[in-house]
Length: 255
Image (cartoon, rainbow, N blue to C red):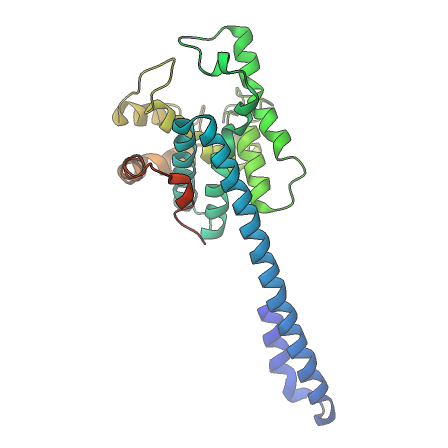
């Protein structure tokens, strides 16, 4: 849009004098329309961001620790998106969307979600449907934020080698937002307490990510994770230390 405006401005010397006034008026109208469009797009972006923040809050009402988990996944995902070469804007969208990866678990019975010990094969099949439930929540997306949220929700359990769910996608057929979210999600879960497991150490969790590079995880994303492990751990620990009302300060970085 700016390029078009500059082109029109540069061509003014080739326009007859009697038409310059009319062209100048058109240019002013064009610039005004461009500014109005930018304001509209900014308003829509803020509205969609606000919707996602409210959905995060709903998740925190359900389970505050899980709520803090999804926020940590969001921040780590934004960071990884930047480190894998995404623009600040794309990284921001991915960071906003990643916390929505498990929103479909709101539709899974608590008896399965919070069951001590291992769940049965039948219960696991029910648990897996949280990806499809999340996809239904964000179906027919009308903005990048909502589309990325849909991708994170549906595809974060797909695997690079095609052995994941719900659709068995592989490699770059899996949306990038989901490939990034998958690494951030697994790392944070490994370090977190759950009813079915104790937390592991940062060193052991990092080794698991590295060991599954090229099978479970996108090699490029897993490599970026390993190269920036110290900063990621610091980021995560800082969020844990400042967990009170964490969602109110999310996202912590914006474009």
